[in-house]
Image (tube, rainbow, N blue to C red; front, side):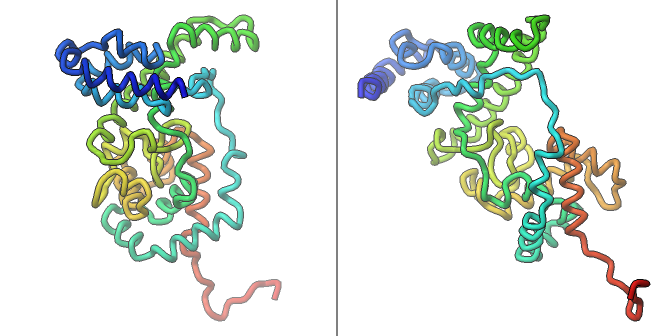
Length: 307
């Protein structure tokens, strides 16, 4: 209850000092005390890059925007294994993909004709990315990206280094610092893209949910990919759960990254790699697609040698 009351007081402060602070382009002390201190520099940086201070305050003073420690962990990099994707190659998953292809054949054929991207590959990506919309992510995108963007803060960096040093006593601090900085820079860029998308939408920015990396919708596009490749008839909110938007957006993404008719297998692999930098992912998409391609029919009159 005390925390809620404090938030209300802070919102009153926002209204009372907004005009002055907006002209100054910095966060007043009265307001900066209302949210996590790590947000101070982030808000000022975003403000200097053109985001409205009142818009930023309204987001970061909300309890739902609080940092997520689990998103601030630093990993030395563990490659994905094929086992992570094995569930998408089961009979049940392939039948689900075949059913989606059958029910949406006309739309998929029109998309294939327009973009020259195999409809079977599009279906395979939708299966793996979100299981055709069953799983578009449960993490709030704003605090997810914010937490990653702040993973290189001195306090977090020192804490994570101590944890990793317990595993590898000879681990260099500079290595961990470099990994954290690259991750934070990437997340900050994606956070900016997300804010640019959401500030013109009517939906609640803090109720937009996605994956643990901030990927969105049926197609699981990162905010930067959404801005570059998403095709939609309406706005962002509609696109998140719209299968037609997901299908055409995936086709546009693949075409824009080099997919075309009669592409060699090696080049197909490179294009799918651009969607997700993972060899097991690429292998899985191609295996699913192969199971969805029309199978050549056996000529009439031919029988098996075993018959």
